Length: 480
Image (cartoon, rainbow, N blue to C red; front, side, top):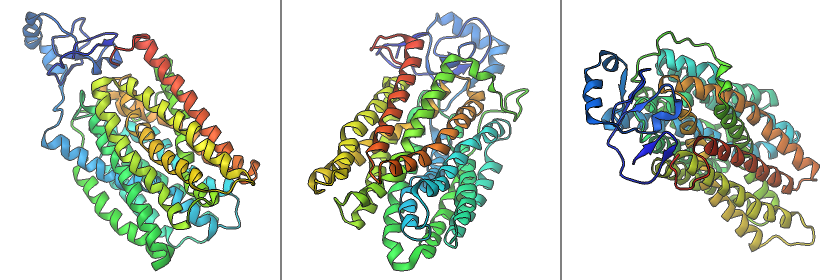
């Protein structure tokens, strides 16, 4: 693939996995110069053969050049470890719709949708907000201690959750312990991949992130089957035993490769928001996550309330959503390495927006009409939406880290990613309770939250498109 500073057009791909982090004025052939342009790690520049020879003889280049295996046994073992950690951490996150629907009709039946929503919004908030410190600590110290601590928190969450009976129990156990545990595993799992992959980073990250969707298929179906057989407590304990195996693999396989950044600290640095592109991507990601967790949380409750399907099948809708997401987390990553990361991101956000406004919104309007008897139309719209939205929204998790990584040097990736999601976490803190309040304001109907979700994706798409245009202009054939 021939590339330039403003992107690239289709062509033969260079056989390169090297980045020159030297601050010198010229980059050697088949290298990417990380400084001074942060997004240059995704692009290659061509030059005369003699430049390569002189660069190879340069002591500065020998010292500062960073190579990426782009795979190999060690690299793919890290992806496997990240995948395993994601099955546990994001699998728990993708199952919150089942927990929400069950608690609403059992332990917390006397509480409103909005009040119960704070449990899950606190969990999602901490899952991302804790990255403020976890990302820089990863940059400075590596993943070992972080993943081990996340294992303790996550296992305490799952095993204690089965014994919770009061509202504050769920706040502390699921919201606090679960949120911190997920963050401690998920942040290093994503960041470690960037130490082994550069040109293939989107594909590798997508494969790992698909683990979260796989967990979102397995655990809802498992819990739906176990609840009537063994009850809430033992269903959660069985889930916990599965988590032990998953997080053990994560502890064994997730590791870093690049040395700590010279002079780096674990303190956050919000000065990076002076970069307009990074600030706009953060805004876009804010709306992205604001919209994403509304269907994940309320799609099961809507399916139950719609009357268009049985209670058993309503609990399986979130598994259908996550089945689409499982493919959607890998496929866009694979396509992004070939067609451009931001190009693919804008396309998948458009898919989220269209599916929400063209499928879920009409279904919620029809099911809210008292003169309409819910039937095959509402059923078909809901299932089609779950599958298509699941696929399109998969990139919300897998491609966002890669888009952020294009705006910084690799050795600063953890800090940039953590800083972005520190801001984004406040959207996840408020999104679910706002959706619950909208449902109450609409007298239990869901057309309001469907509209809100669609508008969130409109804002997210505009933000990512703006950054793409800022970097490479409006030309459609430019890879970025």
